[in-house]
Image (cartoon, rainbow, N blue to C red; front, side):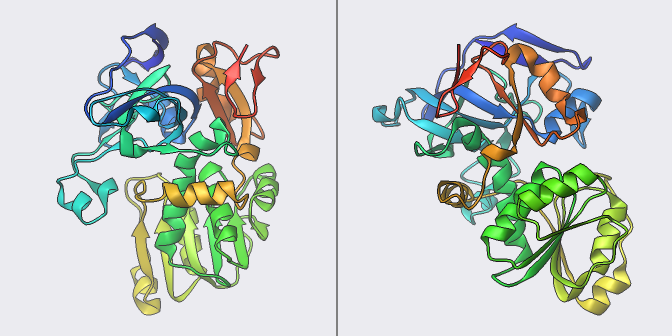
Length: 348
């Protein structure tokens, strides 16, 4: 198979690799669409995220969908041909975290595109059958791939413990911030404020769930919950001031390893401060929201690339107006002659 491989010297090459084979309990998926995540970009530009270092060749990409083309021992043969969204996790089912339902926190997790585990910018991947979620015809391949970042939004809103009629502040109008805004709207929140310094992104936030889009310096009336999707210390600090007594703060954006926090404010208002690291048990909700039209993932795709254009895809965040780029590994180049059928599968 062909795959996009990042090397320790930060060179990105399209290489021929041996196609993986499905082990017991696994399925082999022909990859149709892969979303570009900020973590992929960070690895390409810096070679590491925290303790995870690219010290050997690595296939990036973890927001993926495709079609099952083979199954391993113990998996029903009739799953071949099934269109699926990939939940890119391999937890240890015997860990204490997995047994209590927090499998995303498993200390033995093998997560796509996290060194040394290869990801999905490739023509084929394997995944545990239970983590290959069937998708209905009305969900495109691109939307099926973006169920992964949508799951981050769902996990974030769940952590915020909000309900219909509540209010929320979101800092950062990148892809995750917009996912959170859409989930908040679908959850019945009536005031969804997005704080973002970029004019274009503020306008897009109003298209994707925000009831109000403001600049970081604008005053904000008290909210029930605050979710930071920027990772910027100043945004976190300012957002905390807007949370009502007894409200909740959820940190999602990955920025500085450490930051100063207002302990007095947290104690005096009895604020609940927590974080989000991936997700668990979110795909059924994500599929339901997209199938019902409560969340629009297709509208978030602003650029498409073939596998030979992977370097351009990973640099597309620098283009004005970009929200989400998607790579189609089965296509070399997504030029003007590339067509996308109704399921989002790229072909010539």
